[in-house]
Length: 441
Ligand SMILES: [Fe+2]
Ligand SMILES: [Fe+2]
Image (cartoon, rainbow, N blue to C red):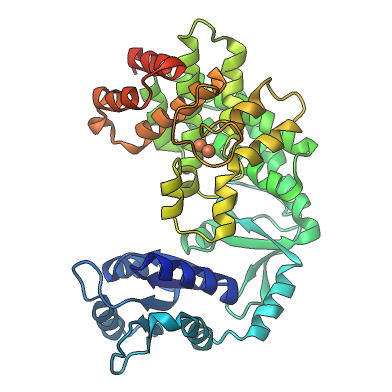
């Protein structure tokens, strides 16, 4: 995978460069803070860096000098562009005001012409990308169709033939090399993903599997549901798999006695933050409801259902961590991507409205899970018109986030609850925080 590393302190310039490099050259841009970060990144992804663009100085370092010395000493043939208003002798320097020249220069250095881009887009339209991450730990005897990988020269090269065994070793290898996607012909995409869903479904429905294995397969269940939804929408197979995943989530939650037990299981067996935070939120939500006089078992099931679907349209872990407008803008994403995150609560709620036999009120709670009645953006104040169950879910998610982000020995419940009390001083919000205070964990 060819990536461009961009180190640029000026937020506006960084946005302009990363968006345009992505759109015009079709290359992934990784934004880093310093030359030191670049060196660490490069040592992990030796073949993954196609070009480096940086400014001159960053906190405490002469960034361009450190980079040039590093490239020179390691004899790494990676082209470099320096963004600086003063030309530096012997270095490919472009002034920030002429940032468009940097895009052109990047295209020239990487030998990407506009003709290439058009040809790539044409080819891409015939293929469908599948996230490699979602295919880890899955075994299939006969692969349902041909599978491809994109080569450096933008050719689709066949890596698995239809009818062959699906080689999990190859998938592991691609994953560890940082390859994000493999491809199948567009018309084969449902056939391809359905072969996995059947297999995941049969493991999920097996009552004899132990909790660690169940945790792993529930995680695969969640990511497969998300994959199937993005490919084919809410069809029969997706619904079957989603139902099985929700009940498997409940089984994992029931298997531990305390939140601490569950947290341990998740940390040991779960991989993605998206999955762990959904499970933990469900567990905290269920624990809260069991202590509220209006809470009942149906609502506890509803919470697991909502936990599975609330962030289902988000494709990356870091997107699920966003809970304020500021955190969203700090990700410095292209506008389209940022919009998707901003309206993810709305999108997920729309999806659930078509779900047959979805728990009552699931769609409206999903809509409100960031505190906004219309599912758009992130609330900055406590809206007392939110549904009580939505308040439970929102605070459960926030508490789950703290549990997941703090090392157990540093988990200071008293201090955390102090913050929660300050943030949620009144009404139903306060009631929920009081209930959490009573948890023994
Ligand atoms: Fe969310
Ligand atoms: Fe979430």
